[in-house]
Image (cartoon, rainbow, N blue to C red; front, side, top):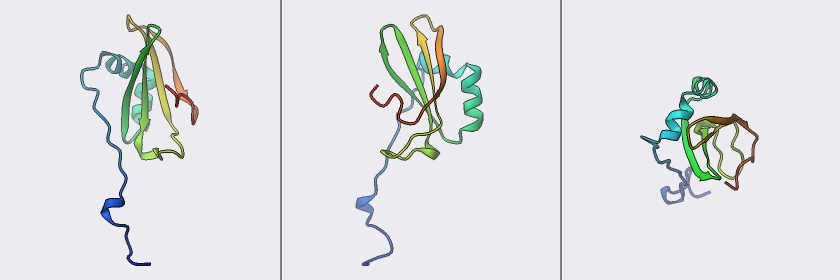
Length: 100
């Protein structure tokens, strides 16, 4: 072993774009389920998924549990229609929704 630590050039990281001003994220944050999720999550990130057939999906992830390529537990989603009415919400199973 040459050294105790890997070189800085081998460090992998991810960054997340803020969704400031997104009406879909704002509406999703107003649900009781999302409020409960935010009570639990230490490092929550909201991700707005592209509109599909008149619905909008917002997914919430707590990056403290984020292990890219391994698992993504404790994810919560909210699906809304174009008027902002909630169609469904709840916890996602690990691996669910990866293709979106």
